[in-house]
Image (tube, rainbow, N blue to C red; front, side):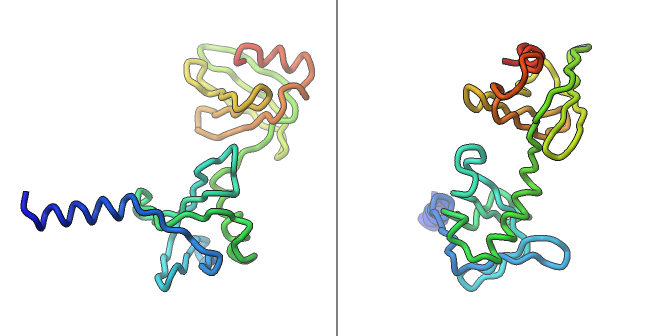
Length: 178
């Protein structure tokens, strides 16, 4: 391998492993088309994607800001959303709410098991909902002893924050998944 090729390889490796921090002075704005734009250290990124690195345990810290057209390319990390200015924080929260829409299940009205699928009829904080999960998949994830995330066949997420807050009848319906 030539010395020039080695230098290019080393430079690429350094770029890939460098961690760039998005500072509170950087600004996020919502465009007329509804996309998120970032002005960071004199560079404008016309469309960015924001990803939670710890979506369940630390949702407002360590947010990865990525180039929307090349989602593998990270622009930088927001260490703490609360440190960003109010306008940027509002834009980021709006984007995260869209990407991480997760209704909270407050009541389970029925779960029907049929042909390898479980059909849920629930009441969420967003209203009444029906969805299905594939029984052969890992659709139900325990985040703690009492907290569950359920992913339906369309990859929508639903959360049960406290299984213990459900009635005995509701818990019996969930027994198959716990």
